[in-house]
Amino acid sequence: MIHLSALSRDDFHLVANIRVDADQVKFAGTVAEAFEADEAGVDFHGIFRDETAWGFFKIDRDYAARFDFCPAGELGLRAFIVDRARQGQGIGTAAVRALPDYLPRLYPQAPSIALTVNLINPAARAAYLKGGFVDTGEIYPHGDAGPQNILRMPLQRAPEPAVVDLGTEG
Image 1 (cartoon, rainbow, N blue to C red):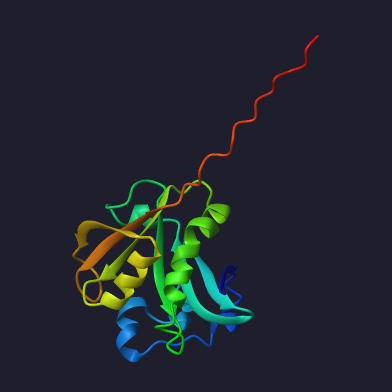
Image 2: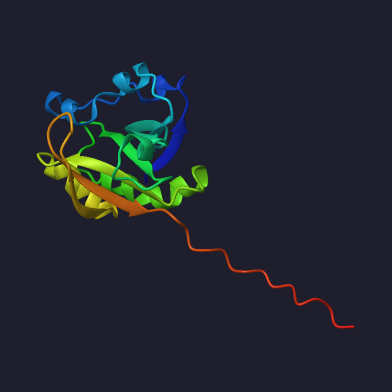
């Protein structure tokens, strides 16, 4: 069973073990590159089994300001990386399935989360779709490694039951 956990910029040591094959770096970069970049509005998160990091991702709180295909308040999922030794085991799909429960606790106002996935990265696209993202049918043509599908997932929890005060009879 995996769990997701927020990371601070001082937590690199917790996820430094995560590696991807060289041909995957063009899609998400490396964990070291993420920690070296100074990006405002970006938070780090780890995918863990027990105390071992199996993956890493960034949540971009300013995604809507960076990309015109996002509505106001939408989060962005970026640099989603599963360690190469753990790929193909359902870790990515399980982590994606956990996002609708995990993210609203940290970002309660966010209506949804979006991502772009490269057209030449079908394994990642399949994991995102299996995990609950929906293909919008739109293409973002300006990806670093070429055109990308735009995927989206709603995050709003079901409303809490209304509390009705019936008062007291007098």
